[in-house]
Amino acid sequence: MKYINSFGVLVFLLLSFSENIFPQDILTLSLGDQYRITERQNLRVRINGRYEGYLYREYRGYLRREADNPNHYSGEFYILEDMKRESQLIAKAVDQIYTTEFYLNQAGYLSVDAKYKVPLHQSFPAFSFDPVSSGDSWIASGYDQVSDSDGNYIRIPFLCSYIYRGKSNYQNRPVTVIDAQYALRYKKSSLDGNITDITGIQGSHKSEIILFNDEKGGIFIRTEVNQEIKYISVKLELTKGFILTWYDGISASEIAVTEEKITQTLAESETDGIELEKRENGLMLKMENIHFLPDSPVILSEEKNRLDVIAEMLKKAGGRTFLVVGHTADVGTAESQIALSRERARTIVDELVIRGVPSKQFIFQGDGGRNPIATNSTPRGRAKNRRVEITILD
Image (tube, rainbow, N blue to C red; front, side, top):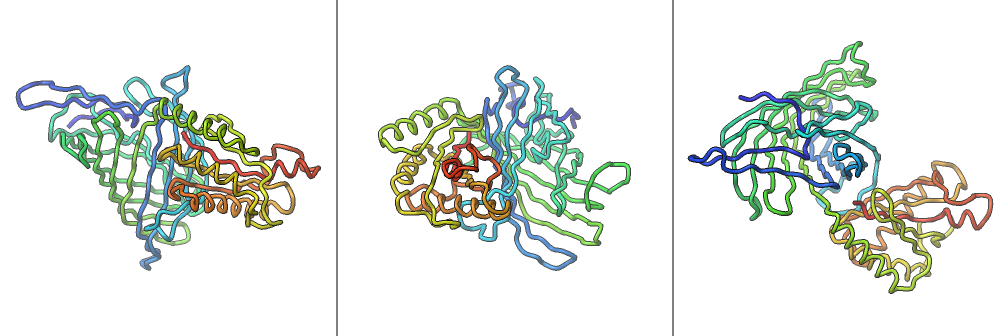
């Protein structure tokens, strides 16, 4: 059994050995300057012994390495709403957006300030510094972020036990397989400083970690979860099910090719009212002064041409994720603005799906009038603020 410090998920060393040669291979994995994390939770929930239903929740993270500091990463995580129709591939509404930043040393150790709520799993998976062969094991530390019913997060440390299973094939791709298992234990204390209505947690996590060894690379993790959370209100929540997690790199050439195709499509269309803007988190398509029925998410037919062009542009982006954000003028209450902008964003998604863009590639949210780009004191300014922005997330 080997004991090591925590690692991050991006950089690790795994040494593989045959029966007669020591060592035979040095395997390295790096997800590059930009990568995305997708985690899907599928959990059955019981409250005080009563079955409450099936919970589906999804997290999507988009992370970038700082150009001047190869050890520093930052990015955003989109927390998607619980879905009742988990078997259908539908566009998902964004419930929360969290930013994060962290450091990785040369060994891959993940260092993140406790103020950040994401990544949810920190220093997991982690790997041995020492050479390993089939059947070898090691232990490494990590942290999980667990949220209560009010959205407060607790950072809980754990020790994870790993077993190296060796080389195999998965979905006709060469892989390395590792088993992992850890337990979460938490008991609230007046000294721990956590603001939460959780009084205790205990649970087990058993994972199969698949590291892809081909040029495309990446990680796939399937985790079985059995967890119990106790609340101050004497509520006892039992969750049981599984979590699926993917780590995928995004190449600079893939991003550049997408941007070139989209720019060319817009130029050839000669359509007014669509702007392209390069943002840190991706290429943004901006539609200003969109014509809806007054105080309604129903879009007018005169927008057909712009929507046709945008659909063709998005089809050039392959399997990327599209974040659709609706904005309104600052008219009415903040609550009504958020609700209307959200419904209008969903309308744009529906229109683009009708035009052949897969619904599973969309996430959407309403931002109301919180981020104006012009004054709200004139009709012209309010028209500019009524807009939809679509970001092709990098």
